Length: 143
Image 1 (cartoon, rainbow, N blue to C red):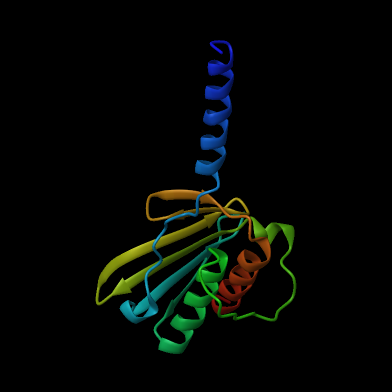
Image 2: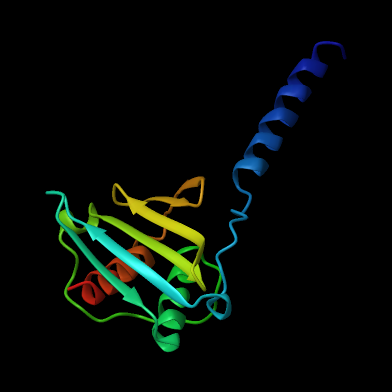
């Protein structure tokens, strides 16, 4: 019986580790109702920067839906039909700054294909189709 205790403890530990690694990201994305504008910046691999400020409420809503799709937090869909992203475009740096009045309330940075930073929280996204859809939209509005 004494020899089984360490084995059972190891199994319990591995099970707990597996459960904790499967937990959902608890990242709060700002609601479009709380946003007056979104400043979008796209930086290509050569360092060239394109910027656009979104103030239209419908466009803010569309971008918000796409962002929530990346995190799997919505049943709504909003697909942007455009040419497929090149490998180079997938590696651009995409930055979104959300403002209420003149105060920045959230920042999202997408870099190195699927690495996201939401405020100070860093995550890797595995929803490539949704992420590329968001990137295509950001490229279109900044050109």
